[in-house]
Length: 229
Length: 302
Image 1 (cartoon, one colour):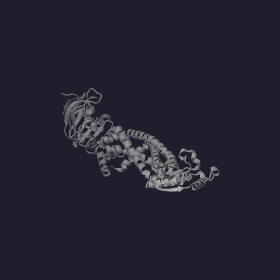
Image 2: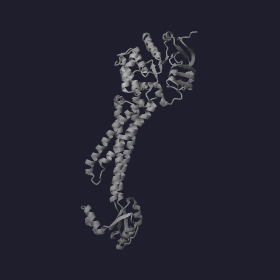
Image 3: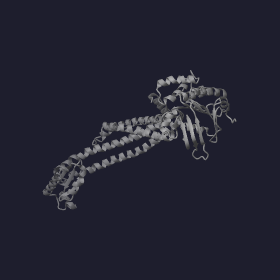
Image 4: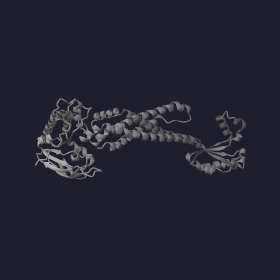
C-alpha cells in the first residue's frame, strides 16, 4: 500500500533533512499511527504520500505507483484513490453538509444521479444521517470532522490519510472519530494517521511508527505513544 | 464535466469580483474597439484606393506661349508635331497605357471655368493660358514613374503630373489615424492583460479553499483551472460585445452624419464592420483565456 525505500527529503535552503533515509512498508488493511514531536518529519511523510512533495532521494510507492516517477497530469487520478482528513476539517463554509460531500464528486466529474445516491449513504455511515442540509458552522467540531471524513471516504478509497484528525477536538469527540476511523479500517481501507494524542494511541494498540528529527526511531506493532521496552 | 455546476461556479466568481470584472470588460472593450477601428480604417483606405486609383490619370502638359521663360519650354509653344509624337510614343507603351485622351486648351479652359465659376483669374486669362494635354490612363496606376521618365524633358512637354499625389495626402492622414489607433490599442491591450492577470490572481486567492479541496480530492488540473479561465473568457466576451456595439454605433455615426458632410468619399458598409466583429470576439476571448492560463500556472499550484 505504502512503501518508502531509503527516502530522504531536504527542503531548499535547509541543511538538516526533514526526512532522513526512511524505509518502511505499510500493508493493505493496516491501521498505522505516525507519531513524533513537531518538526519530526510527520507532515513531510504525509506530504510525500500525497505527492505534494517529491523525495530528494529514494522512492515512495503509494497504491503500487512510484510517485517520484508519476507525471504531473496523473497525480489527480492517483489522489482520487485515497482520502485525506486534516486537523482543520477544510470544509466550505458556504455550502451545506451534503453539498460539501457532493463537491468532492462534482469536481471529479461524477454524474448527478450517482452523487445523489452516495452522499446520503456516506453521511449515514459517519453518523450524520439527516443533517445533510445543515451548514458546517452549525455543527460541533466532531460533527464537522465527520463531514470531512465522509468527503474523504465517499469514493471508497483504498487508503485514508489523516493528519491529526482529533487535534482540534475534545476527548469525547476524539473517541467518536477514532471509532469511525476504526470502522472504516474494518471495511478494508488502510488508515495512516499522524497524531499527538497519547491517550488514543495507547488505547487503540495499533502499529506505531515514530519519527524523530527525520529519522525512523521506532516501528512497533500494537504499540503505545511513548517508549516501551 | 457538468455544465450547470461549472456555470454556477463562474457566476459566483464573477459576482465576487464585480469591480474587477467591470474594469476588465471596459478595458477589453476599448482595446478591441480600437483594434476593430484600426482594421476598418485600413479597409477604408484600401477601398478608397481601389476606387480612386481607377479614376486617376497622368496628365502630360504641353508648353504654352507664356512658358518661354522656363527651361523646358525654351523653344516656345509646343507644335502639333510634338503633340502627335507624344501620342505615338504613348500608343507604343500599351498595355501599361490603357488609353489616352487629348484635351485642348479650349476644353481645359472650359473645365476650369465650370469647376471654378467664381475664380477672379477667369477675367484675366483666356484659353491661351491653359496648356493642351494628354490624359493618360494606366493599367497600373503605381507605375507613374515609367511615364514620368519617358516624357519629362521631351520637346514641347512642360510637365508630367500624377493626380495620385493629391490623394496621397488624404491616405497619409488616414494611415496616421490608423497608426494612432493601433498604438493606443496596444497600450489598452496591455492594460487589459494586466487587469485580467490581476483579476485571475485575486479570484484564485479568494477561492483558494475550494481549489485546495479540489486538489485534495483529485480534481483534474483542467477542472481546477477551467472556472478561472472561463471567467476571464466570459468577461472578455462581454468586452468584445461592447466593442462590437461601439463599432456598429460608430458605423451609423459615419453613415448618417459624416457621409452627408463628406460626400466625395464612399464609406465602407456595415458588412465590413460585421466581418471584423467575429475576429474581435475570438481575439478577445482567446487573449483572456491564455492570460488566465499563464497566471494560473504561477498562482495556482497543482
